[in-house]
Length: 125
Image 1 (cartoon, rainbow, N blue to C red):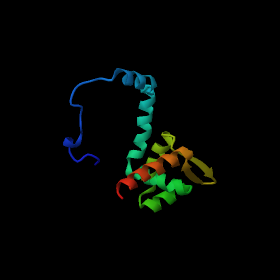
Image 2 (cartoon, rainbow, N blue to C red):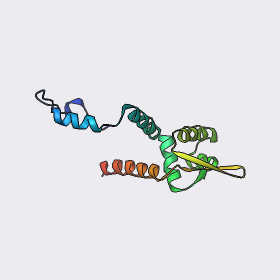
Image 3 (cartoon, rainbow, N blue to C red):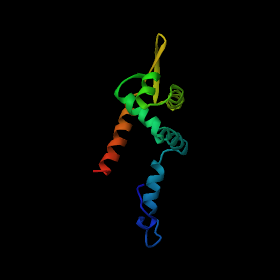
Image 4 (cartoon, one colour):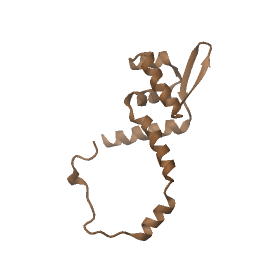
């Protein structure tokens, strides 16, 4: 948890809206639909299992059996999470014979994952 208690949040001592600043930011804010889509995107990172799958796939392409073994979970549970990640466009798959391999959808995902983990690690040093 980032805030230990609400007393740590500081507020303005007097109400004073800086209209020019508000107008500047309002003109440059992303559309509400875009922020809604982004919120859905980031929800995929909010689950520990999905995050571990993404970390694994950032290192190497793997099949469901590999991921299940790696995380000590059932193939069914992994398939369920991969379905969510695929619908969120975070992972893609390819079929090779009877085996389906999963990998990250693109380098953006790897970068977001690395930056998030780096941010957390910096806070614990």
